Amino acid sequence: MWFVAPHPVPVLLALILDGILGDPPNRFHPVAWMGAAIGLAQHAAPRRGRVLRLLYGAVLVLFGVALVVVIGLGLQGLSRQLPLSLAWLLEACILKTALSLRGLARAAKQVRQALEAKELEKARELVSWHLVSRDTAHLGLFEVAAAAVESVAENASDGVIAPLFYYALGGLPAALAYRFINTADSMLGYREPEYEWLGKIPARLDDVANLIPARLTALLIIAASIWVGGNTRLAWQVWWQEAQFTESPNAGHPMSSMAGALGVELEKFGYYRLGAGHPFPEASHIAKAVRLLYGATVLALPIVIGLMALLYHL
Image 1 (tube, rainbow, N blue to C red):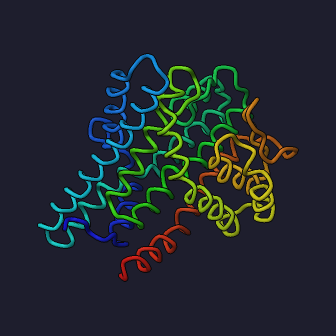
Image 2: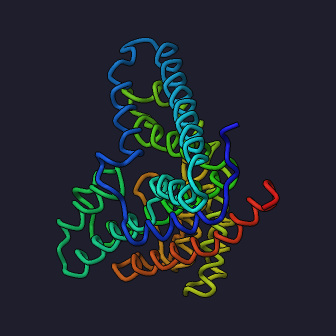
């Protein structure tokens, strides 16, 4: 049997490697490979027929998940041939590619620095390139800051807590499977006519995959606000009352807790308002959001390690 039970050491090593190295270039990045494969498969999708496009999207995401699970098992089989320390290092290097902690923090920092320098056009470009998929051409200073804060909150779940959670559940194959589902949703899960039916199954699968991580991330942000700095009471209140205000069943959870912890209003015009009535965010709130991101990650570690111990009797 090639499956190797998850262990805390690769988690800690992966976070250390992420902090030191950040993301590798796309040509060496497995998540970028997933995106490229999904893009190629998308071009071969049926052009007409809702049912055909729906089925094609389902086959695409399920086949992709099965493939990365097999690859994950194969890599674990390879690691069994190595000394334990090298096996842990190999697993950590692969798990690290499923995480985007440093990359997210760096992207948010660049937007903050542009806003502090009053370079609004540059800030718009940076938040569009690295953090959000919405049109940023006409966003004002407060709206750019809000978009950056929202992205830090949502990607705290998608890019950090969820991969760690699934690694704790099912090791490297589960972490890679989650990243494939999340990547497929980010590329196909839109309501535009071009994507609606093709991306429906990937989007629903991503919703299911993030049900627990999104809510766990919200709780971790609230907990982090106690010692990193934030309004813990307001974070809990906004999360409890407004998490359901977003169209996504999951995105509103980390975003609403972040809005409350920072004491700001986060709005995507025409879609949602979280923390309504509070001041609009500024550049300084982006830095505070990043501190909460790191705090939530640290607090996640004992939960992840405890889950491994419970499931695999470490």
